[in-house]
Each structure stands twice: as C-alpha cells, then as structure tokens.
Image (cartoon, rainbow, N blue to C red):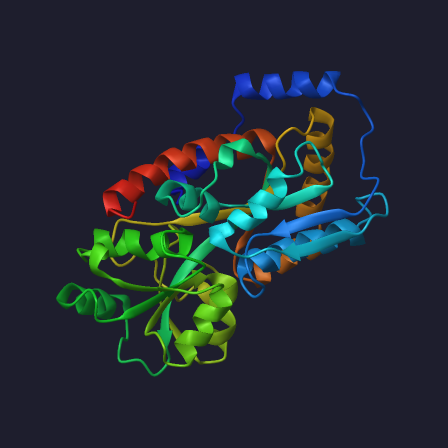
Length: 332
C-alpha cells in the first residue's frame, strides 16, 4: 500500500529496535554461512514480477559467490494465496538454508483473510524492490483513458471484468480498488477475476476473456511496448521515468490514492541473529550490484534496500494500514 509518507517512515531505523538487534548480533555466535543447498520458496506461479525478482536474487547469490559455493534452488509453491510456501517455511523453523519471498501482497492477504497465516511469525530480512502497479486494457479497447474507465464503472460497476492475481484481496486488487473507490466507484460491486499469476492475467486480457487488468510493471510493460495494451494509470505516487514517463498517476488525474508494493526476502522463525546478519549482508551486496539494479530498473520498478530492522517495522505498520484499508473498502 504505502504512500510516500509511509515509505519515508521506514528509511530510518527505530533506535530501540535497532539497538536491540545490534546487541543480539554482537553476542551471536560468529561465522555462520550456508553449508548445504539453499532453497528459495516462491509463493506464486512462474511468470509474474514476484517470480522474476526471486529468481534474480537466487541467481545473484550464486553468481556473486555469496553462499559459500552452495546452490540456491528457486522453488515455486503457488496456491492458497501464498500459504503453501509459508507452510514450507514454517516446517523449517530455525533453518536459515530456507528463504521465501517477502511481499506486500502477503500482508494484504492476511489483512483480508485470504492468507491463513500470520506474517509476523516469520523474519523479514530485507526489502529489495519498490513495485508500481498499473491498470491496462487491450490496445483496441474503447476505453481510452482512466477517466473513461471510471465513468464506465460508475454507471455499471459490474460491467467490466478486471483481472488480478493471484486472488481477490491481494495487492494487485487493492492497487485498483483503492483509487476506484476514491474516484466514486462502488468497488464492492466490481467483477473481479483472479488468476494464478499476473502472466495469466495478461494472457486473459489479450485473449479477450477480461477487459481490464491490474498488475505490476514487469508484467504489463512488454505488452505495452509491443503495442498490444494501453496503460491507463499508475498507482505510484510519483510519475515514472523512461517508458512510464507518459503514464499518468491516479493523483495526476485528480484521484487522491496510490498503492506501492515492496518485494524482499523472509527467513523462517527461530533463526538466530548471526544468520539474520549473514543474509542481510549478502542481500545488501546483491542490491548494490549492477546486474540486480539493471534487472529491476529494466523491469520498470525501483531497486531499494532496507534491512532487517526496517523490514520488520514495515511489516508491522503495513499490516495495520492494510487492515484499515480493507475495512474501508469492505473487502474483509
């Protein structure tokens, strides 16, 4: 979700929590590093931005020799709004050879009740990507602008099928529901069609099975650049650059709403401070690499790095904010 104001709250560490974390690290047994294969559990199907970044991180950890020569296996476990992947992590309590995706969508899933897990039981070790969500239609659609979309949905909220992934109530759904509600649309009456991945959402849009899609930039932009889809609006509070420079934000259009997602890495509960420090340091190095920055920027999103303390604080605050948003949108 995360407006600019909220994001800035997490750019500095909490003194109390930071001091506690550093104290724990200083007394931890030193020198932990992976001694066997690392498994990176991805809670979505292949094809969307979550999968793209998880695989990019896994590959960078290997290529940059940050895991003591061990293999990092990307393991897709889609299903139950990400629950299957988190259950895999739950079974590995204290095992720092397991990583999983930390994503705003999972926090939204908990807030809406779609995800039957408590994200606070896990250890968010880093946030790596700031993601922008876009609303798009086919290039031949008679919906020419976001204003056209809003006008159509005000007249008949159920008239257009809107694709989201992987389920209703997660980040790609909230990223369109929030501005539409602010624009005066009855969002509880929308026809929302969930797909296993944003890649599947785009396939459905291009095939004429839905009329509108809400998805993150990496999924939409290749089709936009190929002339197959028209982007109507961005949920980012700031106008983008490059190919996104011409895409209006909802705020540009006079709709006071935005929604930014974060993508990063989780560890299982029960890991110790030295293991947290190892992965935080390794992921920081990945975030600083030219290859990683190029991957994220070329996908249309922003590379960032926030470590354990700020990621922990973000999880707590984002959950509170999303619970309030879900109640406001009547999505719970």
